[in-house]
Length: 220
Image 1: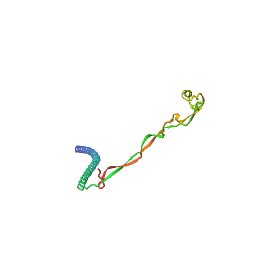
Image 2: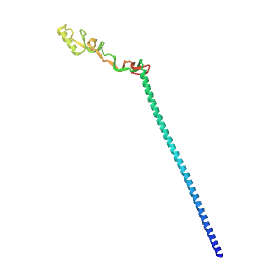
Image 3: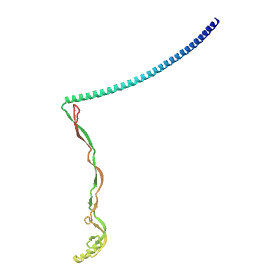
């Protein structure tokens, strides 16, 4: 009987020990499970944030791409529209041709005055006829003929002796007058100067510069 009690007590103690170990193991397992769950939640939040950033970046890039695409399409549409408008305009002009009313176009060309360097005569050249001139000479004592040189006086006496009356035998020195005809004329050279002389006045010339249609503005 006593032996059975001892066995029962030992079995009870062993059971309690095993129960404590099981409880301790369970508690550790719970802690590990909570840690694992917390880590998973953190990773999940981090992954969610990164996914959100990536999604936002992708959305921005997609939006920019879409904007560029829309701009390119708008430009292309505008160019196409302008091209179509030009075609329509050309077709309209071709279909609405008119008779040009040409108006002469003119322009003014200014011409400067024309000058030339010319010699201007202030006083023409001329010969001056001298007046009577008093000089030293010789005078015949008989006929009072005036002679300008000694040779002339001696010749006068010889001619009187051989061909004349012979009365003119002597002469003397004195003042004699030379008549204008016995003198060479006094020559005066031309007097003048050079200057710029106006040959043609300045003037404006109007010349034709083509034609312009008063209706459409075309030129030719």
